[in-house]
Every structure is written in C-alpha cells, then in structure tokens.
Image (cartoon, rainbow, N blue to C red; front, side, top):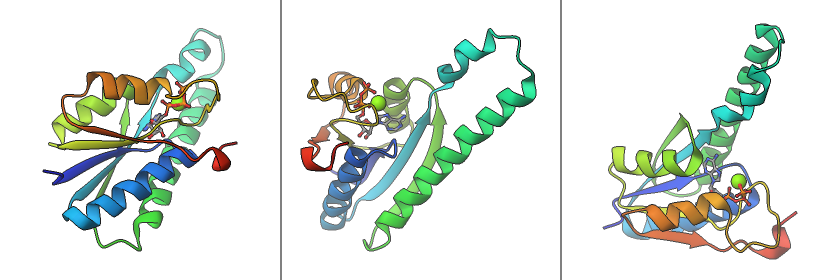
Length: 152
Ligand SMILES: Nc1ncnc2c1ncn2[C@@H]1O[C@H](COP(=O)(O)OP(=O)(O)OP(=O)(O)O)[C@@H](O)[C@H]1O
Ligand SMILES: [Mg+2]
C-alpha cells in the first residue's frame, strides 16, 4: 500500500500543493514518488493546418519541452527537503488518459492530484483532468483541494 505514488504536475500552484501533500504522505509510508508531466500534442493541432515554416513549429515544440523539463526540475527542487525516492517523467498525450496509463505502466498504487490546475476557472470544483482521473482510475485517488488564497 502506497509503495509508489503517482503525482501529476502541470506547474500550477494547486499541483504544487498536491506534490507537498504527496511528499508528506510519502515520508510517512516510505513511498516512492513518481512525478509526471504530460505534454498535450494537440496544443499545436491548429498550427499544423497553417502554411507556416516547420522551423517555427520546431521552436514551439522546443519551448514546450523546455517548459516540461522546467516543471519537473521545479518539482525535484521542491522535494529536496524530503527524504524520498523520486522519479520524474515527461509523457505526451491526452493528460488524464496518459496519467492513468502511466500509473498502470509504472505500477503505482495511488495517485495524488490537485483539484484544479493551470486554467483555474473558479466556478468548477474540479478541473477536467482531476475529474477524469478520479472517475476512471482503478487505484485510489487523493484529490488535494487547492487553497483559494493561493489561486490566481
Ligand atoms: N498536463 C498535465 N500534466 C500533469 N498533470 C496535470 C496536467 N494537467 C493537469 N494536471 C494535474 O491535474 C490537476 C488538476 O488540473 P486540471 O487541468 O484538471 O484543472 P484546470 O487546469 O483548473 O482545469 P481544465 O484544465 O479542465 O481547464 C493539477 O493540479 C495537476 O495535478
Ligand atoms: Mg488544466
């Protein structure tokens, strides 16, 4: 139980709150944290239809990859005070589907996720990623409710 916890992070404040929560649980249960960031390829789908030079597109992909690497580097940095085994991974795909698949592939036995993420439209309690993950996961999901005061 809680041997390996999957923590999906999008770089948002709520996802850092979830990471902190997971770290505190992880220390108590001696769990490994598997921190994953999902790149959404369809961000560029509209651009692909435009007659732009491929250099521009490559530059965009480079920026997206750099952003993903920066998010995971920030996650590692935040976890340095905790005595935990940490693994980080960048995946590409539909975020909730990819999160569920990664949890299965990595043999995680729980997921700790933020209730909201980057978009932070206040009227919903859960974002679409946390909502889908909690709905379709076969393993326990802990949704960390974000502290309103820290939301943008
Ligand atoms: N691309 C991603 N990679 C990894 N984790 C993610 C990603 N997107 C969201 N998450 C995780 O899901 C949590 C909830 O984010 P979610 O995207 O559901 O909310 P939102 O951005 O406020 O709303 P929405 O994206 O539906 O407009 C985040 O705190 C984070 O833990
Ligand atoms: Mg989101």
